[in-house]
Structure formats: structure tokens, C-alpha cells
Length: 317
Image 1 (cartoon, one colour):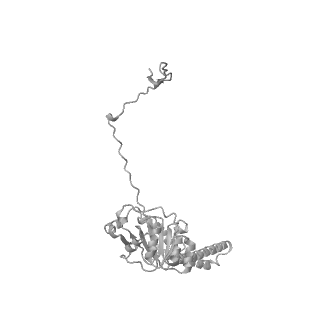
Image 2: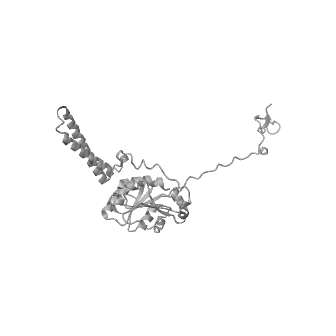
Image 3: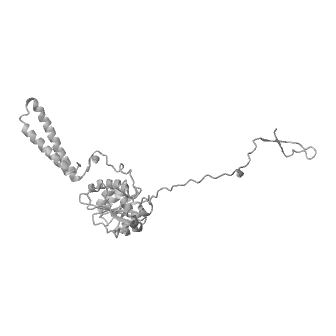
């Protein structure tokens, strides 16, 4: 039973109504030593009433979408530990077409339902993701409230970014919880697609994109706002982002700039094959050097020059 489910909310209100009704019906009977039960009944009824109100407010604002988030277990840091290094079986089955022009496909992560988007996210992987096993490409998230570009237009938009890059289009709904979306993207993208887990760029419009960037600062390093936002949003973005901020009228220009802000693709480490040990033939082995030291003795030639003669080597017995 989810924390924001209607079932839990209905149970809470029914329990509150039952507690209040029971308290009213039994109020006159709880006298004498049983008066303490009146106090207990009042505490229980007030607790249930406050819980029902809290569940209603939480469902409307989506402050805690799950029990884990209520316990403080859902944080961006804790959800960045897994990374997909290979294509899923579904994507690998389409590798033949992906090697040519890349692949556009609807992306269905595990947390999609909690994001309350206007439609399923659409993802694009470049041809290099299908040509090089284990390649992790950078990510550009495109946030919009308008329709997602057509499948035929998305590869051209990706080429505008320059480097091999993955594009993820998310279409926000009227009740999309921005913090939940930011956490979910950080968790599910590296876990399901062969992409980098950091250094992402965000392209979006208005205050929604700015809120998403602020909620996912551990992932995003650059923000492009398009179409040109109003001055109030620009000032907010300048104070929040400080650097790596771009504003402009068209999506192609935003993607071209965003592609210059993301890191290059990460290729798997090259496996080094050790060189074979050199073979040594018996003929190439030098004879052992004698360990006997050589002693030099100085002599004097009185008949010639009176100077010391060159040293004459002598082996010790």
C-alpha cells in the first residue's frame, strides 16, 4: 500500500470516523475508573484525524511519494551505485538497425509511474553504443511540456550535439513531482542504459527546467534554456547555475552548446596481453666470471726512468 495511494487514504479516514463515532457512543458509559479510556479515545481520534489530513496534503503535494522517502532512504547519492555496461536484451536485439543511425525507443524505467509524466520518456542511443561493446556515452536530458520530436528528427538533433551522446526526452505533466523525477533519472538511467552516471546536460524551458536542474545538481553540469525565457527566470538561473548556462531561441542551438559541456564517451579499459618470456638457448649463456680478485703490484725501473712502471696484474694463489 503506497504512501500516496487512495486505499491508504480511505483506510485512514474510515478509521478516523470509526474512532470518533465510537468515542461519541461510549462517552457516557466511560465513567468512574473508565474515565481514563475517554482520554485514550480522544488521543487516538486526534492522531487518526491528523494522520488523515497529513496523508491528504502529502498526496496533493507529493512530498513523500513512498515509505522509503519518508524514512529518508531515497537520496541521489544512494541511487548512483549501479551502471549498465552492456545493452539490455531488448536493445541488443535491435543492434543491426542501431549500428546504422542509432536507435530511438520509448524508455520504460521502473520508476516511471511515480513521475506522473504526460507520456513515456523517449530515449536515443547513438550508433557507437551498438558498435563498441561497453561504451558509456554522455547524456543530455531534454525537458519539455510540448510534444516530443518525431523519431525521424531525433537522430539529426543528436548529431547537432557533436560527440556520441544519448538523448532522453521527458514531457512533464501538471502534477509531475520534480524532485522525484530528478532522483529517478539519476537512478534508472545509468542502471538501464549504457551511459555515464555524471556530467549530464539539461535542456528545457522556463522554471520547470531550472527546478529539475536544482534537484539533480549531482548529475547535471550544464543548463540550456530554450526558447528564450523571461528575464525573471534568467536572473534566477544565473544566481543558481552561475556557470555553464545558455539561453537561446531554438532546440538545435541548445543541443549544440550542451554537447560541448558534457564529457567524452568512456570506453572500457583495454585488456593488456602479457608478453611471453624470452627463451634462452644454452649457446647464448656466457661462461661464469671467476670470483678470484686480481691484485696489481707496482714495480720500479731504476735503469730507465726512475718512475713507477705500469701496474702488472697478478693473480692470487
